[in-house]
Image (cartoon, rainbow over all chains, first blue to last red; front, side):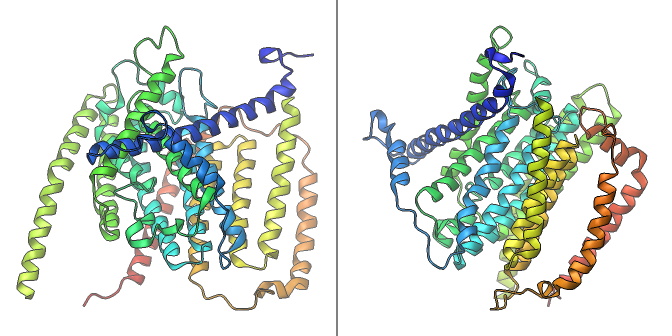
Length: 374
Length: 166
């Protein structure tokens, strides 16, 4: 009889491994969401000069647990005129692709669900499936605001997928692999991709904010204009599943940023003791999660036309230029990345410096036109 | 052990594809059909993975589930739906449908059962490299022609829907 790992029959080990992996990821997502909600409240409180949750448990640590239990205990309400099966299916259609994308995240050397050779493509594919769930949620709610939220979200997600994928392609061109483990291994020591491709990082991060429906791009679920959009008719645990998916998606986007631009698990002492890579990976990922929250507390929400023009008039031309420049320079100088890095830093500087200037010019032109019209 | 899992997965995927495909045609509501179609596409992507063509599976999901199904749902949502819930247009033609489907099904079954060797599978290690070389090296010119054609279609669509500015 063949003996697999831990002396278990491989026939039992294969399904057991699947169950353990799924349980681990579900645990990771649930606990991650609890931690992130606490973190979000505390960070927003600090930025807004408040104290945040304080009374439940030490430093208010148990507040999110109490909220989770409250959500679980709530009655499962479904309005009579909603579309039953679609309404019930939508949260899982949003949640399960997010869960599945944890398979390819490289936590540490050797600690990865599966090293797919198309790992990055797999991630973006699963990200694009979320749209379907949100459109269905908006439509099945049988509510005008929800429908508007769902449709806005579909437009936003499909538009921002373009700059997102173009930024990822730039990195793939430089690294030469789609495998997440391969990308992580290509950045040992201080040779981080962010030093070579800072512009791709910035554009991906902006597109990632839009992909996860986070502020300042959270208008599909805007409370003040759409009464929370596609979430209006949901309550209790179904509502919570949408939010778990949102926080899980934030973690996924942050870990993509960590893996592609910030060297994944690489850090001091990893060569000696590989498990410490998990610590570095988590720290780097949560740094970007905190940046997400910082942005939410700082920037006001965009209008829908500003959102679309930012994507189609600024980000897509910029990422396309970046892609063409990077590809050309890689062909001209195949042995060194220095010209690519110089071009990327110049483009980033141009983007950061020119954007306010162009905005001001447009404002002046608009005022001029209003004055002549009046 | 692995010899047992692959046929089992194949069986599950096949049943799901056939059942969901039948559901697309037989369902009374067009939104249900659209969602079942997305489910069929997902299972076909699973088939591609079983065949060792991960990249094609990913594009299958990215394009068909992420884009085309959403487009169809958009179309369905903005189409006024008739009050009659039963008997969509094509469901009233089931005898004609049967007449055409049965001979094709017999032919497909004959072809499928005539395959005996299973050694036609490509080498392990993914299909990313073969796909990339065939698209960007061996068939670069037809690929570019197709993309120019698509670009022309896109520009045409934009011109058609663009309102005259006054």
